[in-house]
Length: 77
Length: 426
Picture 1 (cartoon, rainbow over the protein chains, first blue to last red):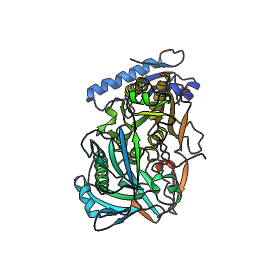
Picture 2 (picture 1 turned 135 degrees about the horizontal axis):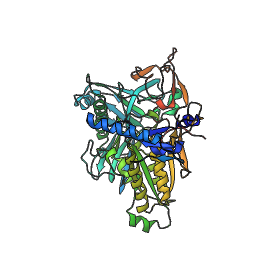
Picture 3 (picture 1 turned 45 degrees about the horizontal axis):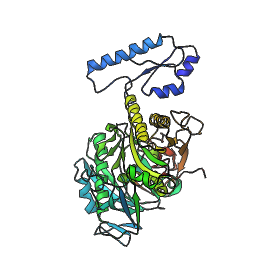
Picture 4 (picture 1 turned 45 degrees about the vertical axis):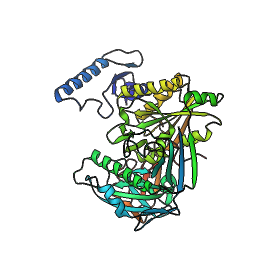
């Protein structure tokens, strides 16, 4: 999916937990997610904390989308 | 550590008044076993049944398969930290009932439980079509949560297997095998010219009904460690898994791990079998990194020349597998990895979710997506209610004529990643 969308000319951010697989399959902008059963949130946190976490992840992904990359890059904290 | 396994060959299982083993026949009174199951109030009923090789019988949904054993000499008891106290096991003498298994079944817990066919095409794929199976179909209390149900059935299986194993106490085994590993220094002195080989076993620990326990500890919480390969033979590692049936490691396979068996067969001849390293397959990337780092470090610290790495399950654990392989190789230790494939029904898709050039020696248990048609069988132990729902099935699985169209994924042990399965390219 990531590669096909990029081939069509759209920049793509792959938000995923297991970033090495994303590297293997060839994504260029990779944002690490939380965990495999809950990539975009964390049910262990209370509601307010989780909202912050989720927002941070989305903002980071949007930031990555606007960043020029030269090859594959994992956007660590 | 030195462990003797006394093998008692079981040639038949029969229901009888008195539970006992006589001349290789296991007699069981289900009324003796029922209280053992129902002592947990989370289970409200259990039905025992016997499935024999060649019979027109299907067992489903299968949860775990267990070999009854009893410890007769040495420290501890079978299933330490789970049934017996937490003494370190793996030395002394253990009796095992060969040719039979306890199979736990019942209404589905998750969606990844299996099928064991005792005859027909399915029987050719599951190693448990060859065992006499004492099946226990458990009925959970109403409104029991899934994880409580999983635990209740898991524990009931171990209690029943332990009770059956106790019947072997005092019986003369038909055959005795001795397994012994040496201390580090001792091993180097005794086998100075043999390559030092270890066995890295990856335990399924993704949580949410995908778990393995070591001496009663949830293995997702361990840092990789070393154990004597004989400890697993005494039930130090048990399954709590509802992962796809074809490539989960039921407790039986931990007790009878073919990689350990084969390494022992070569021990002192072509290699020095140093130890088993256990590691996990967690769902956080940091855990995957930490565990594979530690595993590679242990291989280096033990001065191993080579390791065999086995996986459990598929998908993201493929990354744990590749991380282990890559990092261990980077320490100068050769690896062979054992896995299975999800290459699509036509076998043309990528087999593993991850890959690396360091993984240049790979053994496969087969393609779990391969489709087979299972015949309609005369009798079902358990229930057919879930055959369209388990992983590897679809809404079209149960066909009008009663046959089942399924992927190998649904068959317990079909593509086992410890090499316990029956598939071969030869």
